[in-house]
Image (spheres, rainbow, N blue to C red):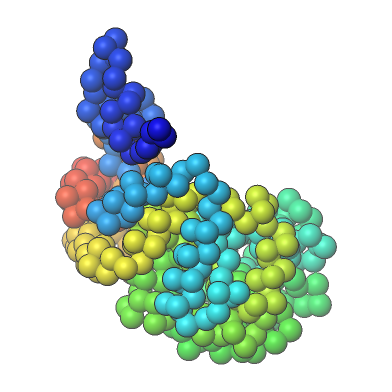
Length: 375
């Protein structure tokens, strides 16, 4: 008689069956996998350096991952198709207009490969999230760096003027990382309608859910009629699934077809549990609403600190804040790390720091520690 085999039960009990093995709590299995602690306390740091969602994955996503373990021995083709169908229904596009990847970073690399392969140039603001351009330069293209405006916004006029017969792609990260600035939908749409007739434009909307109006600010409404407009999204931020690696592109069917041809891993790089987690997260509106609300609270804590201490900052439409360094002594990144608080700086952008928004408690700890380092 065949014996039923349940992987979830095996994971829970099978490994612990031997009497020579100690019985550990679930979290203890992960202790040796956690990243090293940079500070002296021996505690896990407050990680405010990678724009991660401190509240996720949601309970529904966790339940979905556990339910998916029984399919862990199968390739993810069926679950990828189901997620594509869910996204297509939500966005009002065809399933052939959706491409699922292992994080939106894979989409950026794919764009860099496709549009940098034959040389030419990529027009993009500077600073911005640079992976697409860096990848394209490895392939042989040139990044035309267009400085941001004084207020740290994309200079769309200058970007348009930089387009020439060698331009292979225009990249717009909106809201922008690391500045947190957001250009209103109408302005970017007008830019796309003007230049997208002849030049492909990729719009990175990783943080669109954090803007006032949320996904209503997306430019995915342009992709069905214009093969040159591609929108990139991620489940890493508002859905809290950065470690699950789920991204997707929205585009014209012809464009998605070309992208598929260049995909490494035969378009099955995401995992089955990741697909289940993404589908559950899409339906968990209370969780994403809570994430946005808590992020607003966390940003306000930092805003109040900056206003009180006369620290210049850029109002953010994301889950991070870019602020100036001049009111702080020494290297604030190193100082905060010594206190088990991780933030970011950029070698090519001296004089600025970026802090991700954690829980309100995290932000109170950050502002209290930063306040001790004021000049």
